[in-house]
Image (cartoon, rainbow, N blue to C red; front, side, top):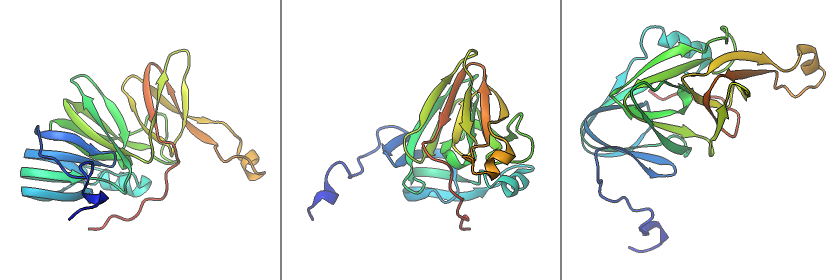
Length: 225
């Protein structure tokens, strides 16, 4: 059989190393020898002897998910084999987290990660109890983290002299040393009179980096169980 579909650029090549690699712009391949974790429903193909097990979100996880819609529903993948992960044809990226690193990321952007990484669902400091995307997953340890983003993300440096303001629906994640708070750029009265609607942003101060997606979040589709 011939045709463009069977060109080498689309054909999966033999794995060269265990663990996580970028297969193409939209998917990640994970060569499993033991276990790893991934977003529920994100597996698009696998081969080998693998088992998939739904994993809880920890104490309070369901409450936070119900409040914000940003809960991180995970599955554990065990065994020996290869699995491919993707999320609605979003772009994929891999981050190497080293000992001492702390990376905060919105649950909707997590695709898969090494079991050597630890994560907690935490409230964004300074964000109170209302608004969008205010519960995030905080990753520590050593390993690789696979992320998805609608389009190519912007990585903005933050310095003590120049804080960065980000729409709460567009923020993907940020590094450890940044302080967060909510910033109101417009009065409620102005919004009622036809303002831009960009009334509240996440303000990040300190020294580090913030990752932003080039579009605002769309409503989450219900996950199939």
